[in-house]
Amino acid sequence: MSGIKSLQNVCLEILREVDRVCRKHNILYWLEGGTMLGAVRHRGFIPWDDDLDIAMFREDYDRFCEIAPQELKSGYFLQTRKTDSEYPLFFAKVRKNNTFIDEAKLDRFNIHKGIFIDIFPVDKMPKTTAKIKRHRLYLWFLFRLYFQTGKNTVPVSPFLSKSGLKFLLKSVKINKDKLYRYINKVYTKYNTDKEYDYTASWTMAQKFNWLYKKEWHESFIEVPFEDMTAKIPGGYDELLTNAYGDYMTPPPKEKQVPGHGLSFSTDVEGDSK
Image (cartoon, rainbow, N blue to C red; front, side):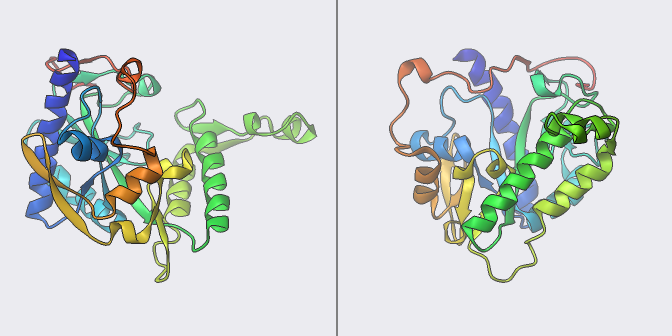
């Protein structure tokens, strides 16, 4: 695990810088996903984990994305579609310059490819689970459409059945920037609702077990994470049980492997593009 440890050390360094900016500007963030699980079960990284995830409510996320380019110390880069025009994802990353990590899904994009931490915005969801399921299905379709090949346009035809419609529309293309803005609009459409019971990050579109009950995030507690402390939701037990089941029992040895299988370098020349 020595290689993984060096990657984790860089991720931790990035987290400390994000933490500094958030504390300075009173921006709430918390450890998310496997990083939250690591904090609860291991008081730090899951030993074989090869990434670091945090989350913010959308209002805090927007504030962070606005101030981070000026506030982050030299050597760190906030990556969004606004700061890195070919970046295709719907959440931000903070990357460290003069490092490199290979993400197969992003190979074809001319973007900053330094070691990173993920920052997921969390949005309100519809009032009922039936509406949430329809919302999720629509988002899943939009994501599939968006992530087809092509930097500026997206072919419609792969998502149509083998029918006359597919033949008629096979040459139709959608402007990718417009589709990106539309998906963000769909994802955030319920944030003005005063009455809601659920929230979710973009991961809910892939896995329904990342749908959160509102009360899980009504309070936050500070917990140890490696040599620092960070917040996790007060409802972490319910959240992690919903996501992982018996989360305090580690998986068998043969499954204790990095989840992303990424190759990386902690010291490279150039701008990490």
